[in-house]
Image (cartoon, one colour):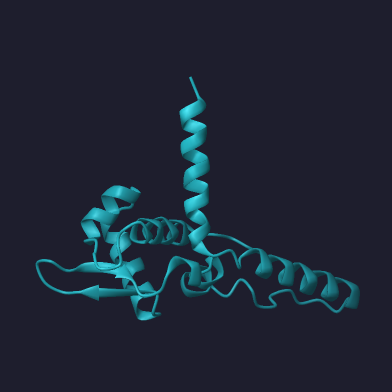
Length: 137
């Protein structure tokens, strides 16, 4: 039912990088690709789609690049998934069994709710990862 592609994983990584810069700055595709370990050609396609859907803005020119159009707190994982994946939150299960229909509908709703996590939560995971790394020998 739910599958997350590399495209979405890369998009979240790129959004995390863009969320770490001050509001008045931009990052070039090359910088985002290097920092987030994303193939640059693939990243270009992803960023264009995110821009088209209003999550990013871009500035052209020598000092141009991308930045967030919204705060990370206002962007959820569900937003990214809906933009980049097929609609995984729509009823794709066809059955004549009413019990199974209810089961899949409930599951779909619970998955949808789980994806409502704002991407600003990435900062908390970054802190946890840093603490974990600091305590290891």
